[in-house]
Length: 303
Image 1 (cartoon, rainbow, N blue to C red):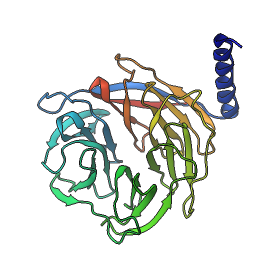
Image 2 (image 1 turned 120 degrees about the horizontal axis):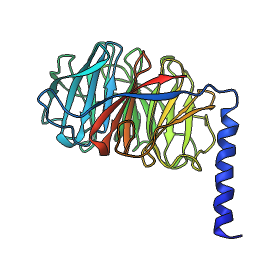
Image 3 (image 1 turned 60 degrees about the horizontal axis):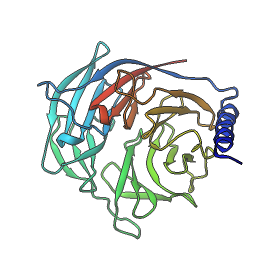
């Protein structure tokens, strides 16, 4: 069988996969309405890898290339820049989250640690997990914060998710699923369900609240998705996957059903180049750290 026939068969298999998971599913669409390129002093963003948001209209950008966080506020639907947060203890932020009190947590990708700030931006110190089971060494790749302000730490050294109190005390761990390849990110929804993304297998795993394991939610989607590196959820139970190498956002339901393939690779408004962290607020507005385009893009969702 020639290479051309192999490519045709692979393409048909990919279409069948999408057809299988999309039956009865509601398709969501992303509509671009703003891009953010600079801070309040018109200093440009540089390769931002992280973006966090909350229900009060606050947006935090991990401006990775500039070694800082930049604050924005949504005013009349438009992101308005505020002050930067820059300290020596955070040299290369790659993930940022906001808890219910407005406190800010950021992951330093070089120093492999999470640091925290007050809602006003004052540095509060490192998040040092306490009372951990073996191994005591932790190398975080990502993290998320639950509705109760519990902290979920993706520990790639121990191959586990660590669940911590808001103060950093260990409460529980769940090991990565058997046979995983590269677990790149996690997300926690409003009900306490946890989701993992395996970037190489292009599979989503789920641990329902109270569960001790991560069974697969989807089959492998690698015929369709190149390298899904980040994951988040919205208030309606939808799961958003950013294909880092493909510049596409995929949306699936919590039952694994396909709900949309959105956007494309490029530099124009509404296109992405190496998207990183995602965030969805309670209004359904989607924020994307568009790293290679040196911007944050904001989208609305429509059915």
